[in-house]
Length: 308
Ligand SMILES: NC(=O)c1ccc[n+]([C@@H]2O[C@H](COP(=O)([O-])OP(=O)(O)OC[C@H]3O[C@@H](n4cnc5c(N)ncnc54)[C@H](OP(=O)(O)O)[C@@H]3O)[C@@H](O)[C@H]2O)c1
Image (cartoon, helix red, strand yellow):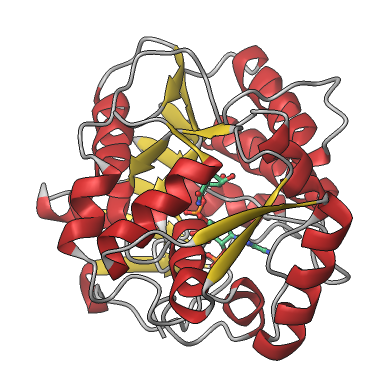
């Protein structure tokens, strides 16, 4: 049995899809057990049972590999990084007790236990705990994932379609290295087949500054560049809050702005993804950014697909 967290979400869906097409027996752990999905009865479903570690252990009993994508993007009244760290530790503990043979875990580029950003701190703690657990592990560190269900790049495209100009935080020279979600899922599954411990950055073949990313998206979807101007972090954040009042979302957080500007979505590692974002954008230029991708809606409505 192969266990995938969040198979009705973003990256977990691509991992589950690939595993099922390889003929594997797959179970997903999710708190969105009734979310619309493409798998029907091909996949087994279980809640996470974070409040009952014995139950969680039974669900994981003798599983071959646990592919873990579980995390929360930002702190909110109804979910917190702190809880995500505690829950992930429970998942590791249950997996160990249950005899799971391997954990393939998703982290982030540049985690740091002393980071001022809780996202990157929490991810670093989890990496260390998994490496110290005695279990066989692969830890992958993507910078940004792109694909139909992605939020960041989709919503940049949405803004580019809506407004004749685009405000960037500061100089816009901080960099990002997006990796295609299908490339990422394939790497996760490859890592599930071996037993050597792995810790690696998983970035795509193109590096963009934030400004270059906006210009590339604009040229591909509109055939022209958008006027880009620099805004302070405070002003940019205020604008995102105003847009958030209309969309009912938290578009970006102050932590995410800091993470971007500190170049934390950039590494000097060799790319491992092969799909270029620019090629993918060309193939999806009529759909990308047509609809706003709403993180809060995904969290509050646990029945509809990420694509709605
Ligand atoms: N997306 C990116 O661009 C990106 C970039 C770098 C690193 N990563 C890392 O990649 C992993 C997967 O990201 P993803 O975008 O593919 O995530 P996702 O599919 O939206 O969510 C992954 C899992 O986390 C759970 N989850 C997400 N937000 C939650 C919340 N607020 N409260 C409770 N549970 C929540 C989901 O629960 P349900 O099953 O109940 O839906 C799902 O099981 C994460 O560890 C993330 O840190 C992502």
